[in-house]
Image 1 (cartoon, rainbow, N blue to C red):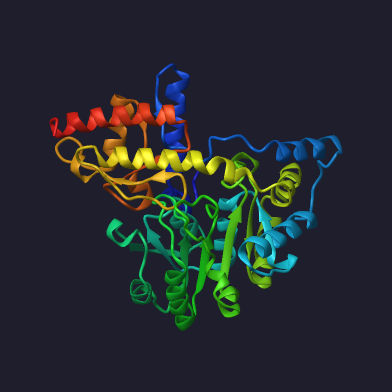
Image 2: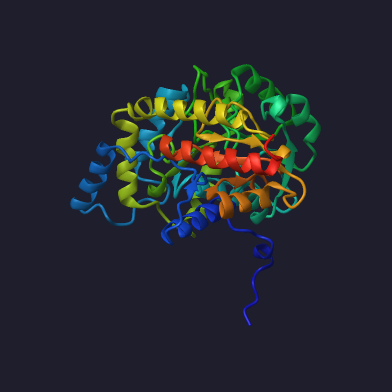
Length: 396
């Protein structure tokens, strides 16, 4: 009999990956399912990035590299942060890991002791609380609402801080809501973080996918003092359609980066050598990819949000970033369908559409729809959802 570690007994697989896998399995079996679960761009990786990877293979760049990333990539990240975020970092303040998720995992392992608290605003990305808990920490969930733009206030943050608080997570733009903090809102949160002497974990992976002229900024830009207590998480996955290449990075204080490097040296070692060369080209090469695909994302957002708001029992917040719509579906709940988890299951089995239930994000009563899919799929999926909503509400 195998005895499993206590830490994994209550650990659940990623719900977003599970929904996507089930939808793909149904598709493979010949079922016409519209999959709204995937959190990745449906556009291909830019050709110049692929060419750089091919060149790396042909040149034999296929061996181990330095654990925290090759110097060339770290320097490209330093240049990106200076160019786009007005932030100056040294190479020893950068560590490259196997994706943004791996970056957060290493950070939690390096930062948290048992009993340490991390404030996580909800709705949250599904993996934040489990990764905090795997490190022995406690995720303190701070609820937000659509009326507040799914953003915490300085007052909420200050009230949630205890002697055990180490950090607060700021994901802007946010998965799953698509909300984002303005410069003034970031400044107000920064004042609390400084007053209360806590760190800010700033997940900026969706920084380039914003709409309506929104000015995306990093909380680390506010002051040198704020930069010193901010840990930036980012990567190439969303901005360059490179989810499968698994390259993320952390920028932060050198002692913390050194600790994360030590942990990485005993787990994955270096990120994939070939992917690192591709990421160098992504950061140093032409930066027109997002400009080319953003109009498509914007058109999809406009359509899906408008359509969702026209359906009975559904209301949808208008996201300013990412490629997710996060509608409230409380009007569809009741009777045999008591929660969004069972609603998502019903929609998959009967309507043949696959959203992710809000429970995965700490927000019961919501569904997440990724519109990183074709407009044809979105239109078909929304027709099926509208028909299901009419059936559930009795044609209202």
